[in-house]
Length: 447
Image (cartoon, rainbow, N blue to C red; front, side):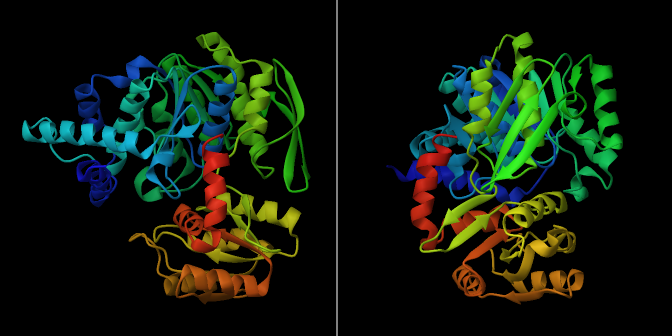
């Protein structure tokens, strides 16, 4: 393998220095220079705050079960960059990603030289362009694209989707999206294009009204699963068994492939979207929908890892108050005595709010360092958690391995929450490496 191919991946990561720049000028220019690759396939956009990855994974799995050639673009990755780009349910090979990134780098350099790009693309703009080009090259028929952070100015918003799914709206990234649910909903609703199917799982009135208004203005059909789907969920042996009755079909009881009662809402959004795709030329059978519910795996989301002997670690990429609440609800049902947790977060997150939301699910918090330059240092994390939870034992750890051992001295079952960076680093930790190999072969490649 040549150094040039390695350099193309390094090039993508070098673009992280440009941070987050909301706007579509760069990605539109890249898309045009690449020959509008998204016009070769149909797109489904998944936007919102929490549940985006889960819904994208369910929809992708069901579409594959229905016989469609799919691509899936999600973010962030946990261990390896290629996780973001899945074709036929498999993370693309490193070599394919390197080649595509090399082509994108050459295009971007040419555009910068002739002045059509005013500035280098951001990391997310570049990876979005790479995904669209990869999917065309691999002959994808339907692409499921997860919005990165916002919506209106997100790089994924250059496509014209046939359908949009919005599992939830909550407070997150307020510095970019606005301080209120209404403001955030407006940004997320920016992905809605005229004539698209729109499926919204949110129930908060101020957020739902934003989507209703957007659909009226843009001539879109709005489907609201919370108003029309009857569901019953029961937790058995840590897994959710779900029965759904929609206006079109009944499903279940089926054991969801993703843990947690909150996945019932995500499942309802995925099911209603899949049912209504028939009107857009993509029929999906009942059996294929059931496979999407039961067969989906989504690493790092309430994932229970066996770490040798009786040791278990419950990994969850919860990184805001709402997702921390969902984690706490799950732990409260399965381990009502609570768990010692590894906690790590980025500096701009509501650490105090997450600590309060975790409630009795956490018996002690150990804060290790994270590799990201955006991460909150362990001592600062300890200070914020103690301010919010003076009742809780909170300590800093010098390393991830030290944090694991400190937590396991307290219990054979521990948890880890606060950031996708924490989950990703744990999956790369030598103590969990064997499980990571199993994860790659079973979850990324089959889910």
